[in-house]
Length: 415
Image (cartoon, rainbow, N blue to C red):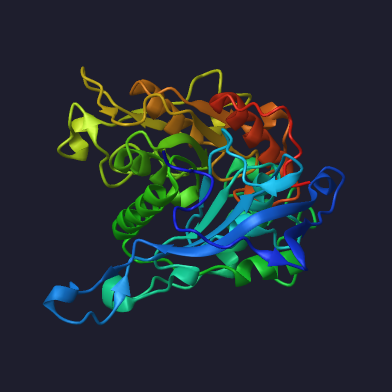
């Protein structure tokens, strides 16, 4: 049986400061202070998915591409008055970043508070944070990927992520409610420390999005083969990975948290679908099979007159749902707990419900959560970095624990 708590490749227990590896996740704010110091039983780095340009039998390889950097931390739990690994129902979480980002999004915040990775490790969940192939520590190889896409723009970052409330006219109605960027409203601008730190972390994308999708799916598949059954957490551009990775790993993905995933609709959803194949530009495997996007018969569907989870219809974009007599169902997703969550002030606020609606129409149960319905307000697109980030992490953990029926008698993990 696979031991999902740690990689199959054995790595020595890390000993730092003459004892165990102790991570101090000091946080600002009343609730964030609750994280405190915690013990990391083991941490390390893996590279998965790399392929040499030629097979060794055909000649000496000259380069490698497709590799994915993975930073992992495994929690430690007390057992019989000594520190040993404890096998539990807490599955590892693979955290997958979005466009122009790296795994840094999950490791900490730009103003120095604890990130989502720290939260989940402190609460007993093994965590694997990746840099998608072609980003960050995974390296960029033009011979395999082509020239990099354009550099990130401070103006775009400010308008979409850090200070959408300052754009005039507003890019979307909900932007005025953005309050959670570190420093508060109107602080997410160049020259603000948190903005500068965040912008410094931005990277250029791989120009071919379909190639990036395939490479990340392959690399995460290699990681799952090493660590066993897992939870996947996606964000933004990596949204389609929420569906492709389970299809590539039947039975191995036990839950999906899709944070504002790219999917069915967009800010231009009243004009055209965001993706050509319902949830992605590359068609998933469907039953009955889909030969081309046209088979889905995507049809513009206005928002419900009553709105969605407290949002009025006027603030929502149209969805693009199947219209044929036969509804095609994405394979390999039924039975997996799925959470799609959206912040109050994000540019995704008006249309993420459409990704949920597409799945529901196709017979895939899922939970759509607009964060204000859980009394979490003011968030933009970068939920994991904002001032209430650990409140959101706690909400996600509650959902996971319920969905996966996690019960461990409230052991104080790593304390």
